[in-house]
Length: 221
Figure 1: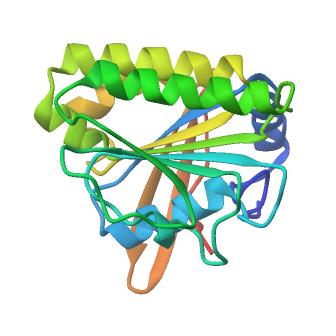
Figure 2: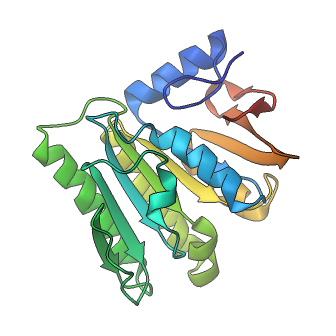
Figure 3: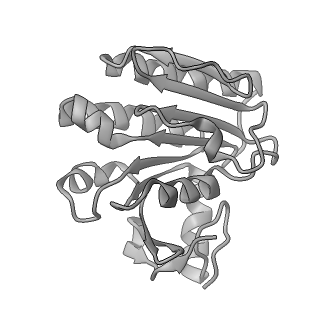
């Protein structure tokens, strides 16, 4: 088993078949692990893909003030948008098309995400499978500031729209795999991916819900 398939994921015969189906049909991944932010960023880069690899369209949603630029080692493409969920507007970055929504309102965040996906599709006469890549970071912040029921409803709406667009979404939740938050949100996702750092090595482990297929720990490079 090696580590590259459609954006840095483990591949074997079983995984190859399952992941190919997820890419065709649209998929959502819950990225978990109570580790340092660097391990989540590395996994995020792999799932977003090379920023110079057009014609992918990327939407980054930040709820906790992260720097969007760190998600791309080679710079952002013109097809990248960023949504910040916070009251104070962040410093503008000319590399991205940015928008800011009121941190108190989940409905505003959901509307902005859906509108961005709609505009990507309308501007390109539809999107090919896997062309849309979405990152949402962090679900911890959403759960800290909103009821679990409202966060669940928001994610149900967003993950459904990602699948409709045959996109690939991943959502960061920096908690342990067996936490209550993961158990609550897991039914919304097609795969759970754990990340961890052992010494200087970052690893990931996949759990695909369809077929209950799992991988071992694999180095993430």
